[in-house]
Structures are given as C-alpha cells and as structure tokens.
Image 1: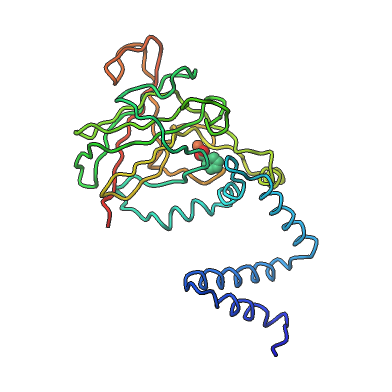
Image 2 (image 1 turned 45 degrees about the vertical axis):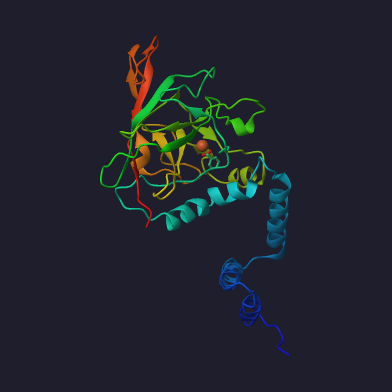
Length: 286
Ligand code: BEZ
Ligand code: FE
C-alpha cells in the first residue's frame, strides 16, 4: 500500500490518470494533473479559494446553454482560445492568418450574389468589403465560399436576438477571377457578455471588456487549409486591448470614406459609404 504525502500525491494522481485507454487522453490527463498541482503549490491555494473556484465553475456551467457558452468565453478571455488557434494554424507568413471563431457563428447562412446587401433593413453606414481570394502563388481562387457574419451597431449578433430571418450574415462566392464583394454596414466595437461569472471576474480587474470593430469570415475551400478569421477596422477603439486577444496586424484594414456615387457592385450610393479592400490568401492543404 502506498500512503499519500504532499510530496508523492502528484506522481500518484498522474500515474492513475495514465491508465486512460486512449494514449492521447492519458497524455493530456497526466499533464493536466501535473500543471494543476504545480499551480496549487505555486499560489499555496487556500481552502476558501479552492471553494470559490468550484462555485465559480458551477455558476459558469449553470449559465451556459446552446446560445450561451460561458466556458468558451472564459477560455477566450484567458487567451487560451487564441493560443490554440495559433498552435493549430501555423500558416505561411504570406497566408491570411486565422483568429478565433467566437460564439456567434450560425450554420446555413443564405447564399448572396456579388455585392448583395447582407444588412438588408439594418441601419448603419454602408460598407463594401471587396478584393480577391487567391493562393500563396497569387493564383485566383474562384468558387470560394465566404461565410460572413457580424454584429449590428448596438453590438448584437443574430444569435443573441429573437429573429426569424438571417440578419447580418450571408455566404458570398468568389467569381472565376477570384473577386468577391460583400455589402454590409460598418460594425462597431462591442462588449462581451458581462452579466455572468466571466464578467464578474473581469470586473475585479482593469481589463477592458470590449472587442474592436470587426467582421467574421470563414472560408472552407476544397484543397486549402480552412480559414476562420476577422477583418478589423483600422483606427478602431480597443484594437490594442481586444478582450479575447483576436487581433493581428495583418487583419487590420482601412475603411476608406467615399462620397455618394458609384459603388463596387456596379450600383450607386445616395449617401457617403465606406470601402474596405482585402485579398484573402489561402494556404494549400499540406
Ligand atoms: C466575437 O467575436 O464575436 C466574440 C469572440 C469571443 C468572445 C465573444 C465574442
Ligand atoms: Fe465578433
């Protein structure tokens, strides 16, 4: 019989979890045990602190449902989600970098024509996002589906609202020469949900709880590494303090102000509008 001591408990627990039938699960659980024990030793975790952490985890589970993913939000604000993205998408420096998916993507967005308005009846400054989809050699990628979604000017995503129709999302397809054109409204920065356990923790710090203005893109093109990314507005507030660490210099784009007149979809705007030019560069699958 092996009696438990402060010195041997980590080895005992790691060995026990090393019996997991799947070797990868065994590796993960053993490392988790070692790091958790090291953490408790390093901060000399007290029993009230341990209990507070257990209660916080319980509340995080209790507030979560299909629409609200508080554990993912916790991972986001700890920088874990973005670290996992970076470890798993070590792309060529010439390729468009990946960033976090976020909790508001909805499957099955409607297919939209070149330049069609995905912000139909949602008020805001008209914005055209246009450019090409190409590969690392500069070759046009035609037929690429760009799945696009964003928040309105109040910071609300469709997933947070009770609406029947697709709102501020759509799927555009690049033309044979790789060009695409999204018509939408300019997004604004917004706060992550602060009415739960994550917000409660953040409120005890000087951390800004905002994300800079951005639009989400997902390009899953056969033969290329899937790309989940955002475009951020140059000069937007919170670019250097994004609460989920999602910003990357390569994804910051100027939204140029244009006077009323011809627009990239071949139409005309009666009001001033914004133009963001961006070429998505996809990395071929290894
Ligand atoms: C978002 O970009 O929509 C988002 C990402 C992570 C946490 C909250 C929101
Ligand atoms: Fe977002």
